[in-house]
Length: 269
Image 1 (cartoon, rainbow, N blue to C red):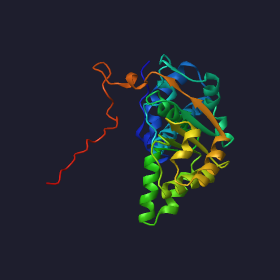
Image 2 (image 1 turned 180 degrees about the vertical axis):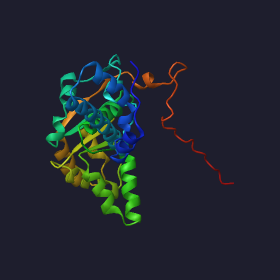
Image 3 (image 1 turned 30 degrees about the horizontal axis):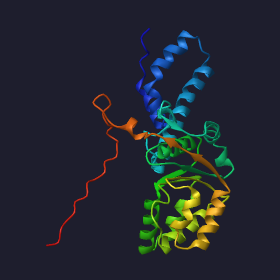
Image 4 (image 1 turned 90 degrees about the vertical axis):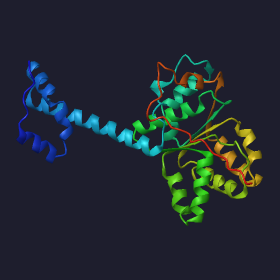
């Protein structure tokens, strides 16, 4: 059965109502309605369900893009055969996102390359799908943004951006020692988000080692104590997961893959 031709008048009305994307599937839906002898209201409900699903999908994509989540790091793309170990029962609890509702935190800790960032971003994608706002960045990026914001007098706005989202993902936390300004900024974020929003932190160091990276031990102890006592600890161990993401001739890298620019070093003669 050939699809029905859509009249120009109907096309114009759909576009006037900002429902133009329904035209992509309307001919097939008309054929389906005729085959199944659908009532008019059932056919209308089917069309509207298509539009709701499309808008929901577009909203998720927009939230994930604004969150800076990696599109290759979703739960569906995680390789379950990876030789890494972690508490599966705890992971299942985290995937349920009840920690977000309780404003609890998550510390994903383990050696380099075992997939900590992947798991954090996968939770971020799930949060976006459930309508939550998310922001993902490395600890270094976060602290540099706040430093630059001080210089152009936008610090309060930059800090509010970090505090306003439902879920803040901070990758590679505790790699370097923090100077006094960075220590104060980290303290402010951990304190302000305590019981008010969730944080996922990935780190090569356990929370018991974070204290030594702060310039101000007293503030550090206060902030870390609040975080640790309101956080789930997911310890990941095993072989490097990055080997599974290595591009080959059979699986070329996607055009959206991030390219790291090569730094050129100039010499002073």
